[in-house]
Image 1 (cartoon, rainbow, N blue to C red):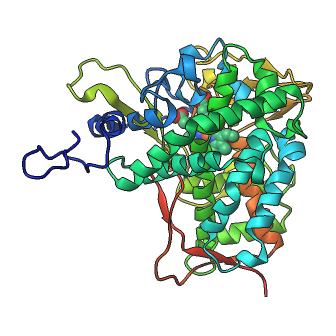
Image 2: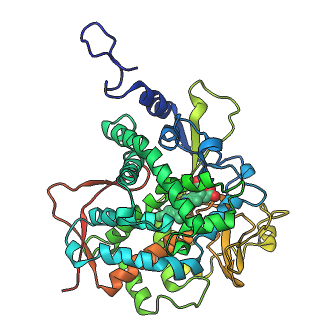
Length: 480
Ligand code: HEM
């Protein structure tokens, strides 16, 4: 497909001559041949096993993750994000190991200082009036690596930063047919080996006990609770450490849209009123499974829905010549807004979670009430091996949650609460993500910050989520 440079005599390719053949074959062609379909809005909080997570990745992204432009999980590592249920061991082990590193007790004691420090930097007086997302990304990569492997600042090599920017650029700008994405893609590929080497060294240092406060990193818990076994091998830990950019990228999207709805002018008055009410009435009261601030954040997630849908592969029965790489996604926002699930789905109402079912409620009895002869997913627990007393277990519908010192930390388990997906493949980072947004709101409240659209000639384009690029056009003001 590449075109020759001598004019007049040679065939002309469909893509710019700067796109080398390997990139066209590995990223552009799979993208052009792929289709994505919208699936049903679930009635129960789970996705049928016929819609599989096995290799459920947009096909143009394989070259971003693997050397030979196609999945090579055995040799190069794998993440639970792309594993079918049948390949996860007897009890959805990789998801449970992932969750074991981010349970609420660890967030409270090990990770919160990192989150608080992040917002102190983001909301420094010197950033007032500047485009918010630019300031966010000045600090984000340090937070990311600090949480994963305990490294910040100069301890994060330049190649690692280049990889991170390349990876995020490809996710956000999405279209491999553009020069921009091609450049980001090749930047990520060129630096991936150095990144992996660095990660191997950091993981080894955590194993050797030479990283200060190693127990404030995810890798520490993945090593302990995964035991470097079959379902969280060392190469999988390295892979997870960089693939997680995909998950974390959504934090930026959520921060921007939360700031947007909180704006004094042009924001959402209903959300603003609830924010004030929540903060004035004791945001951290433990009057329910979820505190008032949890409920407010959950309602933000339900209504803003930063992740559009859960992507699956499926078995073809009859397939067109180009149908090889078709995916299907189960939509989140329309499920969260489905009148089958809530009487008033369009209203912003955090109190809906006072009575919504949780993973603790959804047991054998609930499964029977739903008309099922048995629980779709057996209740299986993974005990902590990191010195804590507790386990990671699951609801009747497969959603995973932590129990520490006998205290369960449920998540809302109804199909109408869709922002973190469904069942056994539900987001493993939900607790941490909710806390990240809670810390954002705490900082906004404490510092009396307000958000406003900035009067900019041109706003910078910032890639955040997969397929999402934002105009960086909101800034904060401190109280006068
Ligand atoms: C705004 C932030 C986030 C949102 C909206 C979000 C949403 C989701 C959704 C919808 C899924 C299900 C995908 C599917 O079934 O196809 C998912 C899966 C997952 N998320 Fe998140 N996520 C976020 C942040 C995070 C973070 C920070 C982490 C890690 C600390 C994380 C770890 C995971 C993992 C490991 C899975 C795969 C679960 C499995 O298949 O078993 N996520 N996430």
